[in-house]
Structures are given as structure tokens and as C-alpha cells.
Length: 77
Image (cartoon, rainbow, N blue to C red; front, side, top):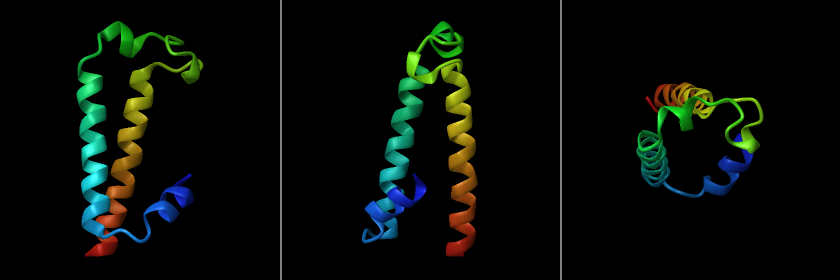
């Protein structure tokens, strides 16, 4: 998946990619803040998440993005 994302954006400027990532991440945060604890914490509430609670996916996503953000910032200097 990371390769597909890279290929779709490899010709964009760094600032365009960063701006898009920041905007999408803000949207995820905004939507997740509007959900109830039950919406976030109920296992299996969303069939496509199988046996995961939405909050687990959100935490994992944040950690994944943070991992890549730090790598990219270190690479870019």
C-alpha cells in the first residue's frame, strides 16, 4: 500500500503532499472527536474492522503516521 501511495504522489511537491496529509489527518481527528465512546470502543461495531474497535484502528493509524513522519523529517533534514 505504501508503494501505491508513493507512486500516486511522486510527482507532487513536498509541500503539496504534506498539506494533503495534514488536511486528511485533521479530518480523521475531527470525525473521530464527534463519535461517542460506544462508537469508538465497541468491538465489532463496524463489520469491516472485524474484531477491532475503531479506537484501536485510530491509535494504530496515528502511530503509523508518526513513524513515517519522523522518518520523512529525518530524511529531509
